Image 1 (cartoon, one colour):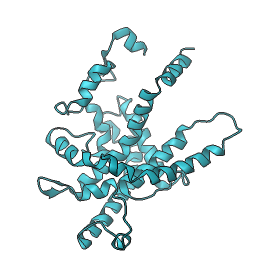
Image 2: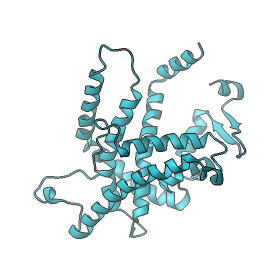
Image 3: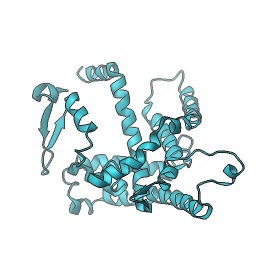
Image 4: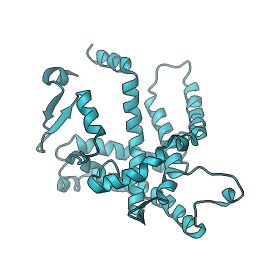
Length: 274
């Protein structure tokens, strides 16, 4: 807020030895940039995401971005989202029970609870698998997600770690390799199981569906049936798009809340100025 008041709606920020980053706070200009389908090139800051997300929709550009966006957009049709309402309700019920345990105590941070809720919902809707993050918050997968988010933040704001040579000599890089192995293995394992079912049955239907019990199609299921230039997406393409979706959902939800509850944002800013 101070920088905006001092320099206006657009100003450069220099971090270490890298090229300056252009910070934009003007909402109309931001709307133009984010809504453009022509401006798709990403800044060098996105490199920190490549090891986890590869060249998914968030990090890709040009033809790849346009072709993948075209096949991903239908997955967010209201009818598809409505089919997952029971998933939202089930996981929100767990969250409410967690909150009930805090009643009568001192104030507490809701962030860890909401983060685990989001992870449960994302995994079930994107992968079609349950990770039970809320009931098993210290599972290997949940801890790996948390660690990768910390690693990305550390590397983004440390100019020395932005150098690939220096970064690969650091302990953070070793942490990243360990976390990525767990994260990628889960996605690929689910993907390979679903692809085998698709190849053997000619569809993603399982035994329950053959008996007339309709199953929801997760984000990954929809991508498995999609094609680009008449060809199905590779395992790497699928993994990158699913991992990207799982990473993005939490961020976009937070941005939505910030825009919806601006009074809370102003209150928080005022608190820090006291």
